[in-house]
Length: 310
Ligand SMILES: Nc1ncnc2c1ncn2[C@@H]1O[C@H](COP(=O)(O)OP(=O)(O)O)[C@@H](O)[C@H]1O
Ligand SMILES: [Mg+2]
Image 1 (cartoon, protein in one colour):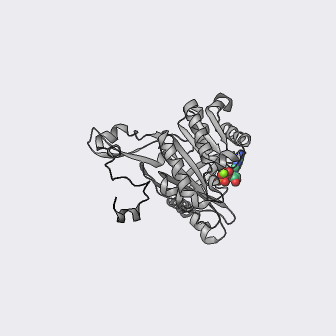
Image 2 (cartoon, rainbow, N blue to C red; image 1 turned 60 degrees about the vertical axis):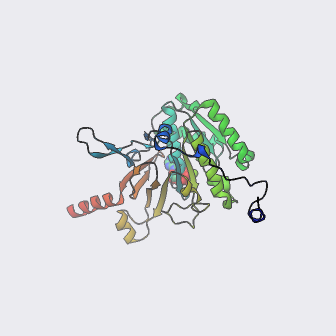
Image 3 (cartoon, helix red, strand yellow; image 1 turned 90 degrees about the horizontal axis):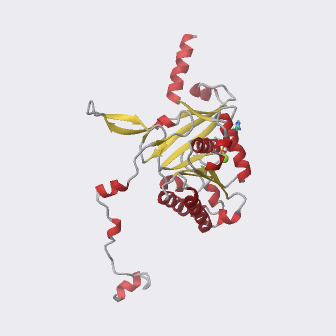
């Protein structure tokens, strides 16, 4: 190594440039290792039909849009929203649905201790009309809310997750919330999310990371604590929002009354499959179940129709 080189490289880090053959894949070879795009039913009414893929109709030889019937398998999804927008309810519903169908789900709870989360899960199951006792052991909780060591020390977290993956062989991992893992160290957000993302990929998990918006963030954007860190790394971003109706204009726009709270849901992006991009109404029922409703355009159409009739 010449004098000039030494200026640019630390000697211990420098090595002669080499071809890294393991990083080269031919299309066919990569495809053999690629997971098949299929949908995972979520247990959230109105959500599963918002994801699509293109398929060749053998009869007509035309390309047709086919619904996946669920969120894309192996996706790492970022679910973002301000507080009380239904994020926890959604991941609880998803957990209950998958576990009730005999699959194992890892639920990393960062905000609420495990015994409280399990109450929520059981309530969700009851509201969905399924018996929690019949599948309760399909849910493996990691309590990072009570255990500061696992919350603050990522190597311990990954070691624990890997142990669970080896022992229980789960397909799904929920983290509620990932932003809780970089509280007071937001400059590390990207790095932390990237590590979790890679870990999910390594273990073939379909994962949902909940991320919290602060009040300063625009309601319907994908931004959350840690800036755009999360949404740029993950495969898909869902946004949940709520709005209090305070003006006649908003009341007309949303077909609501002044003083109503309206809820919204939007898929901000998904790089694994085609998806609906429109703004949907969202409902949280009195039993605490999230349902994705019509789009804003659909609701306005039906409101006008009703007004016309009167
Ligand atoms: N068991 C329940 N029954 C009815 N409504 C509920 C129940 N749990 C939560 N909710 C309603 O749903 C809202 C959203 O809850 P949650 O999913 O915890 O929000 P987030 O995780 O986005 O902060 C709550 O503010 C409350 O109005
Ligand atoms: Mg929550």
